[in-house]
Amino acid sequence: MLRYSSCSRAFAVALIFTALSAGEAFAHCFVGARFLPATLATDDPCVADELSLPTVGWSKTGDFPSATEWDISVDLAKRITEDFGVSIGTTWSHIRAPGGPTMAGFGNLETAFQYQLLKDPSHELALLLGLVVEWGGTGAVNSGLADPWSTLTPTFYFGKGFGDLPDSFGWLRAFAITGQIGYQFPTRSFDVVEGTPIPQVLVYGGSIQYSMPYLKSQVRDYQLPDFINHLIPIVEAQFSTPVANNFGNSALTTGTINPGVIWVGSYSQVGAEAVIPVNRASGTGVGFLGQLHLYLDDIFPTTIGRPLLGGSSAPQQRLNF
Amino acid sequence: MRIRIIVFSFLLIAFGNVPALAHAMLQSATPLVGSTVASAPREVSLTFSQNLESAFSSVEVTDANGTRVDQGKPQISGNTMRVGLKSLPQGTYRVRWRVLSVDTHKTEGSFTFRVGP
Image 1 (cartoon, helix red, strand yellow):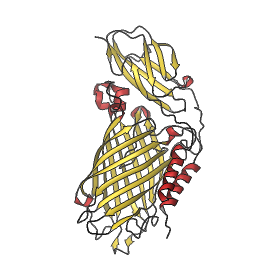
Image 2 (spheres, rainbow over the protein chains, first blue to last red):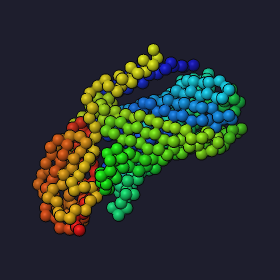
Image 3 (cartoon, rainbow over the protein chains, first blue to last red):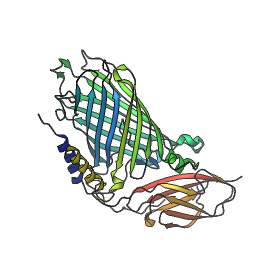
Image 4 (spheres, chains in turn orange, purple):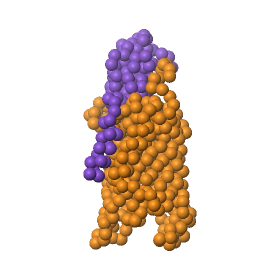
């Protein structure tokens, strides 16, 4: 079984990232005048050069009695071409049950291969297709924090800003939505340890967000404090529903609804969300999710912030109306 | 030791390369975005969060019929772009801009202002 230490993981991420260092410098998730920030619980609908380090989560599980869980994640996204990107990430978890054992270790490595289907600037619309792969056996299987089997999740993502509404809609034009839906296949159909089938799962979610930067620069400048003009209040939701090969398991949908806010700067963003379980199986009480997210295409515009292949560092044509 | 290696790896990623630049975002505009002004302005001035490449940045101002009401070549200095205006009667006008920051990031946007009581 292939296993990794935390040190080799950190080095692997750094070295892979450093190796992918050539190409062209352009945007993270800009679609026309709209900027869609990196969301915390779901994914934004763009390929990009970005680093989430760290994402920190705290919650109480849906077990009886509830265990306290800390999750610390890192995720690196890198464009290979202008429209195709890959990402790699992993999560370290620490779970402590009252009166029970403490479990700690890494989950499986997760990669995503994503292709930008569409960016329509005039309608602030972005469509993305991806394949998310969780590599079985690369995490702490013996601790029960990772599965020995892999999963494949073809996923469709979208984002839509409402800046194309008529001017009469005023402040409503600063709203945007994002969403994703995927179908998760395990590479095994039966868990011999638990003696149960491994279900196929529909995973879906999205966000509704209100962009104060958009309000200020595209709709109306109310001359609010600068800090306020960098905020994007957001509500995210994420769910999973077993839909096949589920004999003997609960078919209950689990998920969370996450109200929060993202502060957007020139080179990074900081997000914080409450995590509200939708039912008892999803968790107990209100948890927390926080993230520091770096825009690598802005921090390193001439080197690792560019796609690996294609394009040039110079604009191809003069911008004219 | 483990923590030190992880921190070192992060520093390698975050600070191991070139000076930082970013997308040019509209910071302020005169007339203000979405505002109503009593007297017709003589120019539109846009200030961005980053310096601009003058050869690849442009702005246009149109009236409600889509007719251009800007005149002259946009003047770009550092992070500010200005364009002169014809004599504007009362009405609503749209400013459309596209800019290239000095690190080749493109951004664009538009807004309206109104001349009238």
